[in-house]
Image (cartoon, rainbow, N blue to C red):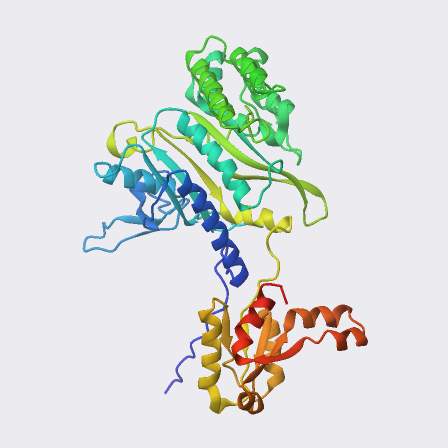
Length: 494
């Protein structure tokens, strides 16, 4: 009889493009989300938690074709008797679910509807360094408000949010543009062919990478990239390309100069003039609230989401320098963006519904704070109550209960208590600020020994023998004093 084939053990590894997050990282993210939510709530936005799974039809943007049913998203087809079950997918952002929620519940929701949402999203895209297939977003949107006052409010709230989480004024800049201005530029160019318009939009989107000269070449005959390969251009004449270049380079010394340059770039195009008027109103509304160009500025170089947004667009950029993995200085770049998208709900209702919002990349923002040392220090672990006598476990549990009831994070050591040194090593590995020690002698006298692990580490690093004797890191106190003395260590007041 053949011997049964042994089943191989599964590999203990995360799927490609995903990662695990441990204690301090999870805590830091939770703290950041709480701060962001507090700002959003202060502005009058209500929390919404929608399903992580949507129908692919509702998601819309990555609607699958016949050959690639999971293009861009993690999608699967529900099984049913005739093999025609719905295609479902993990959400790729938090805005598409909002459009579905509003369309579905619009008769029960106030207008405007102001909501914020936080949570993971999933992209079925090629992963890379710092680019994962699951990441957190933190969105706030106003649905049903046509006035650009809603866009200005989002920009002000974004500035307040960045400062709340630890990005000081001067280390960020929120840049604002308007898709209508770009539409006016396209109109001024006199382009009729939609394919050519799309090619111009794609070229504009490369402005940050190739600069004015590169865009000029790509709008014309083409250019060679860094590898030497030739990239075909759009084929415009220099005269046709001029409005685009005037638009991209219209940033002036202040908002007034920028707006004047934009008016010249759009020429007689009515839609372009409307866009410039909206930018002017946004600038005035923000100025009235004290948000000057040191925090929020009109900037035509913001060309994000050109095929998606219908009006104002904005992007938050961190302006301080960090050092990359090769030791080279570089700016951190964008951590949030958004804009007006008046056509998204229309997919469901057939009627245009004005909407505007912003999305913050939480993981990217955390990475920026870690890069500057504003978060990412060693997380403080719990106070550890050590076990000297297994038979007195109830007494140790009573001690730890006292600490917890006083709001101090604490635990009883639940490993093998035979080797006391291992208990202290465990406390060190947890980053514990203190250890509580009590054996039979201490219990008889109604006292405990408290080992200040923070001070102990400092003394071990820097102190001389005499200093070590004068500043003992372990001391005795009564059981009734235990909470007070431990709190002093935890609060750094020992």
